[in-house]
Every structure is written in C-alpha cells, then in structure tokens.
Length: 51
Image 1 (cartoon, helix red, strand yellow):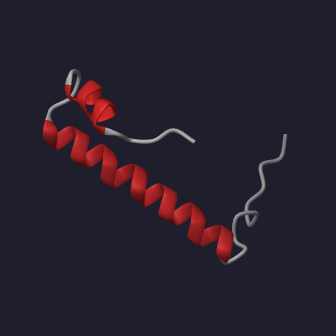
Image 2: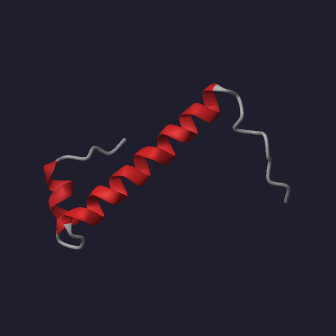
C-alpha cells in the first residue's frame, strides 16, 4: 500500500492548488469510508453487475 508522505503532497502541489488537493482528499476519504461501511453492512453485492 502506498503512503501519502510529504513528497506525495509536494508532487500534488505541482499540479493542483491547496483547495483542490483538500477537495480531492475529502472525496477520496468519503468514498473509501462509504465502501468500508457497505462492506461491513454486507451491502456491497446488493447490485451486482451482470455481463
């Protein structure tokens, strides 16, 4: 698993301003949290994708 060290955020700052990095961090955290909640509640297979 990759870590988010200072060097990572410095590379992000080369491309995005602080507000965009903050928004991206909040979005990623929200989606990861929601994925974990659905997994714990056993709702992650409620809508399977049919090929």
